[in-house]
Amino acid sequence: MMQLKTADRLNGIGEYYFSQKLREIDALNKEGKAIINLGIGSPDLPPHPDVIKTLQEEAAKPNVHAYQSYKGSPVLRKAMADWYATWYGVDLNPETEILPLIGSKEGIMHICMTYLNTGDQALIPNPGYPTYSSAVKLAGGEPVSYELVEALNWEPDLDALDKTDLSKVKLMWVNYPHMPTGQVPSAAFYARLIAFAKKHQILICHDNPYSFILNDQPSSLLAVPGAMEVVVELNSLSKSQNMAGWRIGMLAGAKDRIDEVIRFKSNMDSGMFLPAQLAAAKALQLGADWYASVNDVYRRRRKLVFELLDELNATYNPEQVGMFVWAKIPDQYKDGFEMSDAILYGANVFITPGGIFGSAGNGFIRVSLCSPEEKLKEAMERVRKNSGGWKKG
Ligand SMILES: Cc1ncc(COP(=O)(O)O)c(C=O)c1O
Image (cartoon, rainbow, N blue to C red; front, side, top):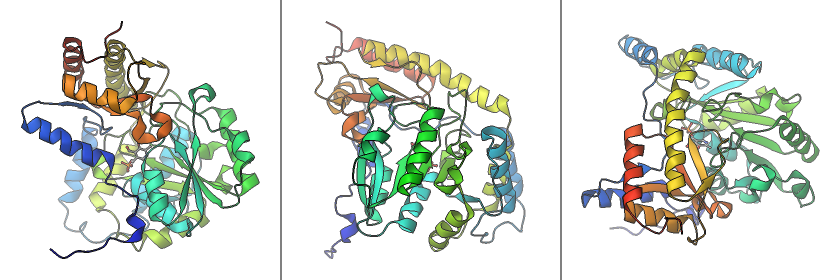
């Protein structure tokens, strides 16, 4: 086989943790272990039936199969703007202030590619979604992590950041409700964040995919007065509409920002399948009963996950929101990796080690709510039967 050197931009970028770990889990399954995977946040429930029906009906039409607009279908853009107005109280011009995306993950890359030159810095949360730092690096920028601690409600210490040299910082990645800690944002913090961004002329990139999951008050950073000047916000249908595999997300922000990102994105892809866009528009029109039904399921599951964590002697904040439960590991483990492996190899249950979200997550584990109650009960049985070091005393 030809030896081919990969581009320098891949230096330090490993394979995505889950893609590697899933191979290990696959190998265990082949040995007959039937691992219960409580790792990834990929909703196991289907979208609303009307969404599927729209996709089917639209896909059967002869004239929907061509390339689509780089800016997305006007129907979808309007549905996205209406959704922002209805749920977040944010008025967006569907023509100019909304850009449909093939999932918010690609939006993270687009934003980094649009704004970062070699040597530019981007602030990223530790712990946080790993894609922020890889996208910054792939774009040639330098990720500078800001640590989040429980004592400060997992909010960045803006006063401390203010005292550091921010001259090379162009972007700041922020994500509330925060994954992995489940922290909800406070209005006071959002106001301070906007002031901080204005003072330092930093573009705040807010990633907001979890606002509807087990959260009574969905909010957008764009609702804060003055935010449009310094914020772009990513949103997604993956979690709140159970459409992770459809790959539909959005970017919201000022016209100038959207135009800038389109300059990059329109060179990367050629739009999304129109029936999928029309079905997504349908999904965004669903009412409060949809979100309530999804959350009923997650609430029941979360109760079981709390019990599982009690059994594992891990502690957690019961007020957290989102699609996961974040928990502190008991003292006998060096870190979450060690505990995760003890549970994987001792009880055939996979739980994500908090350290994959950054060093500040080392003492934690994260349990996904994307498994049915029967699986969670079985996980509990397995954990109870096994004495893999997590028993009290
Ligand atoms: C914080 C955060 N942002 C973005 C994403 C990606 O979402 P999407 O499916 O819209 O690409 C995820 C997915 O797990 C996430 O946890």
